[in-house]
Image (cartoon, rainbow, N blue to C red):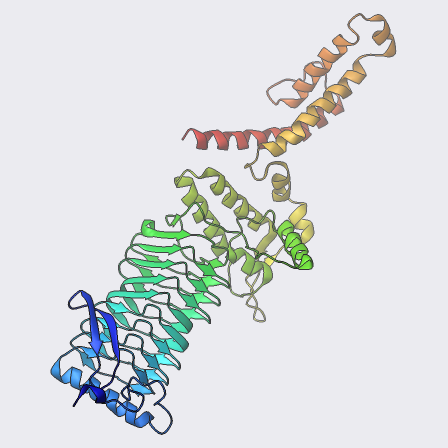
Amino acid sequence: MNSQNTCRFKRKYHNYSKKKDDTVVCHDPAIKSGYCKLHDSDYLNEQTKLDVEQLFMAKVNDAIKTKSDLLCIGYNLPTINVSASRFTENVYFNETTFNGVTQFERNEFLKDAIFERCEFIDNVSFTYSKFHNTTNFNESFFKREVLFLSVKFLGKIEFVFSKFDKGSFSLSNFHEAEFIQCHFIQDTDFKLSKFNRNVIFQQCNFENFADFSESMFGDEAIFANNSFTKQAKFRKLKFTNEELISFYGDLSTISFLETNVSKIHFGDDVIWEKQYSEQKNIIDKLKVYLNKLKDFNRKFVVQDEQIIEVKSEYGIRLETVLNIYRNLRENFDKKMRYDDAGQFFIREMELKRKFKKKISNSSSKLLTEQKNPFLRIFSVLGFYYLVGKYGESYYRPLKIIIPGLLFSMLYFWSLGFSNFNLIYESQFGDLAMNKSIIRTISAFFPFYGFGTHLALSDLLLRIALLPLMGALFIALRRKLERKFR
């Protein structure tokens, strides 16, 4: 057969066996376009799809039989079903378009499996397959649902610049995985997956819900600067070593219910508060500004508190959310990031002040509910927050103590001299001022006796200012203990 009758398709690719770039040349018979039936982008239609499928399956069966590389680079394929097969050599599907439903179920790939820059037009399934070596789906686009259910990736799996409409990886086993700058459009499911060695999710965009619940991490895992537009569940996670787990970037939509986060590494750039996108319209800008004012004191509110606040989920216990704040406080305390640890302690106390356990009944599964507004404000915790931010602020008690001291001194001073004294005493009331200072100090400080003064005003002043002194003492003690630990 001369060269004029053979397919003119030629493409460079990386040969994983030779570990260098190589060129694939197609020697199949050419049709009118100059390409073969598998490479021609216009040949495939309803009438020819069976012909193309048979040609493709012949290639697959020949590669399996002869134990040679399967080179399907640049193919244009219809609905295919390659299941329960065992590939002993490398498989290359670079730049292949899968136009119909694609099934690669229960297959075993003993060497490298390359699906670079592929386009999957319809549903895809790799369920129960096993990949022994490098697996590469870089820059591939799954336009419908893709199933990697109960798949074993025993080598390294790469998804770089990959795009998914809807992806499910639940119950899968990853030896080493990279998901870098991937785009997940619909819900994404990694539930009950196992990550045995290094795994990285970096700069991925999850437009809908993402679920990593009950997954296991056996080694290092990095979640860096990912965008979770809606809720991401990292619940009931299991770790061999929590200190090898790292999170960076925006975590405002991540739920950590029943996950021990006391030893997880959180980067300096971690953001817990809700993020707002830039708006061009003046009205939208005003709305964003008002929402930011509303959320001003909510910079360390985790997603799980927001869930019970808006009642978006039932069955969440108050104690479970409190544990998240306690774990985070312990985490940041150990790393000597005391300001952040203090903020999580404030959130824990605020949660106690605002919410309570709901007595369950047969008609409702709501386990946590908000307290009465009156009880939230006029309570011991409400007073403690007002005067000292639960012992985390020494500015607040000082802002009340200093004006209180000045007022009490002026008050006692006004009682200590008359107009006659002001005119005829050379000190212009110095004696009265000295007495007012002594009287204020004796009423103010608990270790000072009342002396000769035991008026109702002295007693009331001490009663009012003693809690403030206690709040100031607690706050200073915490700050100094943390500083000199």
